[in-house]
View (cartoon, rainbow, N blue to C red):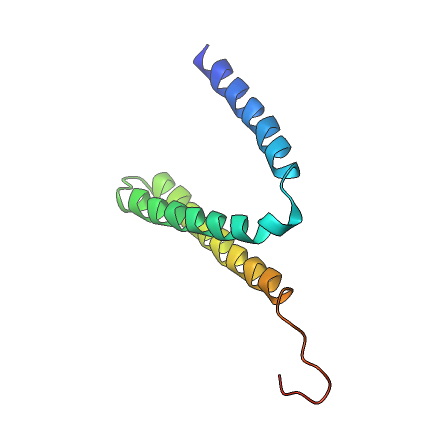
Length: 98
């Protein structure tokens, strides 16, 4: 019975997440990405801490996968945020140095 309850909560959270994210205006996406990057940093630290306590090869492998995926997600978020912030910088005029 617990598995069904957890699955129900997971599915409902997906629907709520989609609904919330679809209502965010374009102006707020950059600040939200920055906040998400901070959360990904916490996830990365958590993955490192949990992997440090691994006792079996399976735990170590899953922990390593979690570390790699969290790092990719965090770095990718910073790259996307940087590109989004570039859109708001004024473009140089003809003859001006970049």
